Image (cartoon, rainbow, N blue to C red; front, side, top):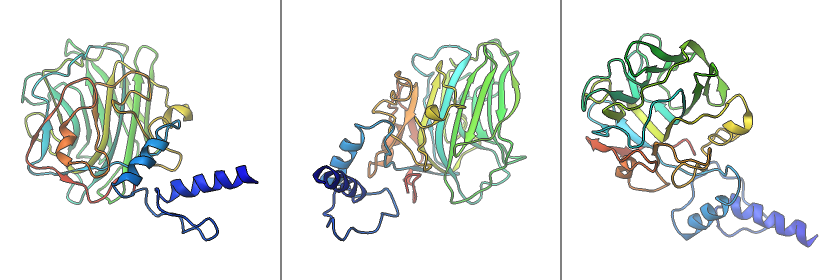
Length: 299
């Protein structure tokens, strides 16, 4: 009986984010994962981090669609051409973003240049479908052209994009909110060029096609692969309840290797830190002024 009470007390402690709990008269379940940013929240985060794929409270960065975006100003450190890749990010498409192209991640062959024939992740203007497009180093072949079957309009709803590809094996995966949503146009057994001269988040490197909405936990790992048809692999990025999970301080938990891009904000962290790359590819620079998102995928 003592063991059963101890387990119940532990569950109530975690549900209350460290607040006092009367085991005989427990409070109703929280409507949000958000807790205070004090010592209780830190203890809660430390406890949860010891479990496999724990939920994590994150903040988001709000891009206004007019002035705000981030550029690397250089290539991604340690990037190399390969046939594999993993992408994960949470996005909220704000009003005014329908039937216009919204760039989440983009590259260019010149610093600050247009993204012609490069690697792009965006919501396309004509169909409101998410698109991942990648070219080979010779700039002669579209190595990967993958898009969603469904359309996604502006909404207060958070969307989780999860994709992976292994062109040598002919494997492509694209999930939106943990549901397969893939309309692969082409996947060619050739290397993707990941060594572009510039990269950007929230626009193209030449400041066009700006993103209107919020982004959280942007993760990009060229040269890595997970089969997302396996539920266990998806749980490394999204919980069964559809919330963000802990990817590790450098984003290395899902695969054991840090990704090249991992833009993350802890709950209550200064939004300017969204430009700090927790991965290995180098930091970004903010143009404009990012705001903390009014909501988070953790909510």
